[in-house]
Image (cartoon, rainbow, N blue to C red; front, top):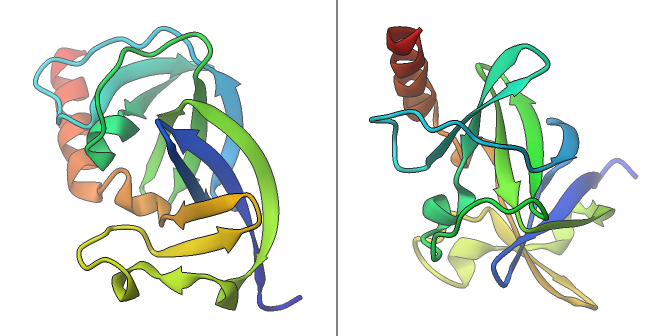
Length: 152
């Protein structure tokens, strides 16, 4: 089992996506998002997560999908990676799965320029595998931190 990894599978629009499970803190129901003026386009805004300000990433903007407001039926996936703790919006979170690391196809082999790390072929369809730090680059995190500090 040394060549396996746990992934969290979720959807956004008609896309099925996955990230490594390790940086995922938890999944919560969507809550009210407070906008931050002049923030990067991929930022929905911020939420209060147990007393800590947490940026919410607009995954639709990040992936070039049609934008829509956050609905109560949406889910926030809260992740913690070195230098960044944030949430992003998913339409639905479907499952946690164990997959063989060698079983996916690198996306560059199929479509040049796709940011996904790879594509996993499953019995129920295709899943795009992403590296979580691609959703919220450190440069955007630093800019947002400065904007929040200037508003406080």
